[in-house]
Image (cartoon, rainbow, N blue to C red; front, side, top):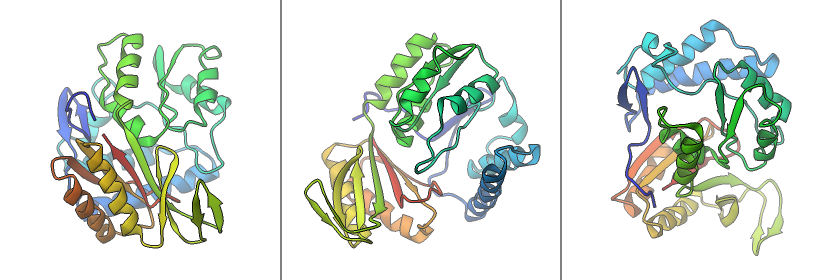
Amino acid sequence: MAASKTKKHCVTVGGKEYQLPKRLDADAYMHYLEVRDDIMGTERKSGLYTAKQFRDMMECIVELYDNQFTVEELKDRDTGLGVDGIISGGQTMNPSTEDILREIARTPAETVFVLPNNKNIIMAAQQCVGLASRKVVVVPTETIPQGVTAMMNVDPEMEPEELLEVMKSSISGVATAQITYAARNSDFDGFAINAGDYLSLLDGKLFGTNQDINVMLEKLAEKAEEKGAEFVTLFYGEDVTGEQAAQAEEIFAKHCPGAELSVLPGGQPVYYYIISIE
């Protein structure tokens, strides 16, 4: 589906490109979970982070990338990673225009790119274009996988308008699948849904239901195979164990043997898996 085959899960630090290992170190992952939970607790209380928490998260990134670069290289303003701010949200907690404007104002740049990663946030982001004190470019990403792909195609040498078109073009080839659960009995879009069933979504539409999550994974893997996927990334949630994620990886590897397959700990609530298919 991708127009060109570029590496995924790479970061550029100090002018060099680094690839995330396909198999993450268990100790590094546990450290990441500890730091993530600490930061999320602070965010719920005040929304303000300490310098130590920022450094801890940078240490996690370095560990996850198998110490291929240093914390000092990562935090360098000129050569480090390219995301300046993250606005948190969640189920029924979409950020407002004011929230987005506040983060834009904090960002040390003349031009700020905003990636909503949720179709319900795009309008609030677009309202910032005429309200912010600097140039704002909204990339209409509707899902996290689209946001990741858009960032992977950033060329800092491009003019903002040209870069926007490149990022929009890159996300057009991304399909997003999700697996969650039903909280109650219902009938929706031709499906009879029972409380506790697993639900699979594909690009925001109900794709299937079943009481066995592996059946849902099989059907999504078949869909990825049908689409001729070149890249498949599984972000597994907080209620999924590493062993279960490895089983999911095997299912997709069976159906998409030619695809570049990555399995990463997303740690997200509600969704057992968020899957990027390109």
